[in-house]
Structures are given as C-alpha cells and as structure tokens.
Image (cartoon, one colour):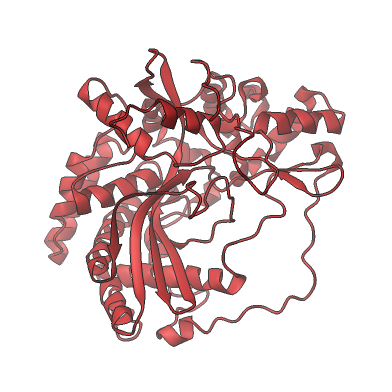
Length: 464
C-alpha cells in the first residue's frame, strides 16, 4: 500500500510502483521532466511548443491535468482558452466550480464542433444501418494493405507521445466496428420516439426493448450494469524508451471534492468516467456497448471500444468498478426503454436550445446520465460528483412534461430521479457523509494511483 499523501498533495497523479503491471508505468510529472531533459529545451520553451498544439480538441484535458509547476500561463494559450487557463492555473477544480463552468466549458471548443444531438441520434446513413441481425454480424475484417506504421515522437518532444503507443484493444477491428454499428442501431430505434419520425426497424422491431426480447428468444444472453473508471477523456501518453519500446504514462483528472479528510484538510480525488455497460453474447459473438451523455455530441449509445489501458479500464483487474444492480436478460428491456426516454428528453433539449456538444456539461456529464439511470431504476445513487444544475433540471422537467403531453410517454420515474438526485456543488452535515460514501463507491477497487489507494485505505469501515 502506498504511503499516505500529505494534506496538500504535490502530485495527485503519483503512482505506487509496487502496483502489479505487465507494462512499464511512469508518473506523468517524471515523464514531463524526462521529455524536457531529452529535448534539450528549457521547460518554458517546451511549454510554448505544447501551447501551439492546443488547437487540437483531444489535447484540451492537458490544461487540467498538467502538474502545478507545468501549468501554462493564460497568456501562452489561444485567446478562447485564456479564461479557463486562468482558472486552472490557480489550482484544481472543485465540484462547485465544475458545475458553474458547465454551461461555459462547451463554448471553449471550436465553432465547427457545433452538432445537432437529434441528427446524430437518428442518423441512418454513412454507412446505412442494417435491417437484419445477420447483416450486422457479417462485418468482415479488413485485409491489411501493409504493416501498421510505428508511432514516432518528434525529436523536440523528448520522446513523449500523446497516445498510448504499443497498446491494443480487447476486441478485433471487426468486433469494434460491429459494436459501433449496434450502438447506432439502438440509437436509431430510440429515435423512433421523435415526433413525426420515419419508423426504422431491424428484424421487424421498432424499439430497442422489442429487439432485445427477440434476441433473447433466439438464444442471446444480455446483461447491463453501471460502471466507473478513472477518466482521462480519451487522452493517453507514452514515453519512448531510448533502448526501444514504450513506457506508459497513466493520466487522470484530479479534483478537489469539497469534502473533508479525517485530518480536516480537503480531500482530493480523480474524476471518474461512468456509463451503463451493455453486453450482448451468443456463443463466441460478443457485442459491447456503453450508454452515457458524452462528448460525441449526444446522449445515447456508443461502442465500448476503448484502447485497453490496464491501469484504467480493465474489466477484470478492479480498475473498472461495477455499481448497483446487474440487469440481465428479461430485466433488461425496461432498462433499454428508460435509456430511450432519457435520450429523447436530453437530445431534444440540446437541439431546441442549440447546446454545444449536444448538451454535454449543461445537461450533465457522463456521471450524471449514469446517476439518472441508477436513481430511476433503483431509487438510489452511488456516483460522485453529480453536477447537473438546478436550472437545467427545471428545463429538463419542462421538456419531459411537454413530451409526455404530445406522445403519451410516461416519464414520471425520470422526473422523480431529477428531483431526488443529489447535487455535489456544496455538501455539509449528513449530505457530506452521504457524498463521501458515493465518492468511495465511485473509485476503482484497484489502481496504481496513490491518491485512489489513499482514499480507499482511509475510508471508514462502514463505507464500501
């Protein structure tokens, strides 16, 4: 077990070197130091080069997770990022600040990132969706035209690469394509709920619940459960070894929690990613999907196609934690119906209000969509932090009542969940105690991050 971190942690991304891993892991700050040393640049010059790369949206999380001594000054950043850089330069975000920024964060993305959540949810083309299961399953593996090129870090990067070189996926290319196509099928079936929608059907089914029931009748097995893991917003890093190969750099987004440690100091944590994981299985055929409010620009399904990072998202070593009830087979159709209802409300609200990134942030983050599902289905919430704000809850309530009036769809459980969900912008007294329980429940059971290990070690015995 890692030694306890001091109350003011100098490096919230510090690693426990004794954590079992088949891959060489190197702490982020050490990787940055090594990069500058190898590049021959000063730290200031290296950061100036990095700032020029921040026009790439996938690198924006770096503003958040750079160690304190490596923070980019607002003046170094593109103008659209200077306000956010000024906030992050002074320290870690809190749930209260995250919630306050939720409406503004999406506007920091480029203007061409404006998307129509309903259009994405209901898309049938590019490529056309299959209307029979057999067609969906017939995806063929591509014939490689040549050996894949090895990633190369530039000489001035000092060997640091903003991707996890040398890692693979749990499923093949064809299986991942099938996951993505199945997710689009479920989204389009959900979009049949839109007013005046042209009905789409697969195997004669026009809803995800009815299609699932048909799959079960044909011998498929199905299960779903809310899961959490450490978030990095898809960002990865690896450091080239001078003698060959790569060391992997575990990344995460540290936050202050607004909760006290046992010593009276504020607890830090690493922000979780959360979703509803759905697995469909028939013999050797496995389809894996995830449902959440995401940066893809909609609330809905995506293929569970993450690069396999054993320190972050392994489904078997404790770095992924499963919460609440497991929904299997005959219990699942009701779950899929609720997913369609929530997506209908959120995607219509995002379209009508022209929200950036399909409402991501304003209508909640991935954690909020998972919390809404769990609260609706189980009458409880095990996730932290829940940040969807009061004004957007009220707007979603109004939207859901309008949908109910026009379609007859019963959204009462959804509205109750919106009312009952906690808000972690400010917790004290019994609410703080309950928030601490949810914080611990949202952490992985195993992690190389010393901060996660400290959180679990210091949790009171009555907490999970």
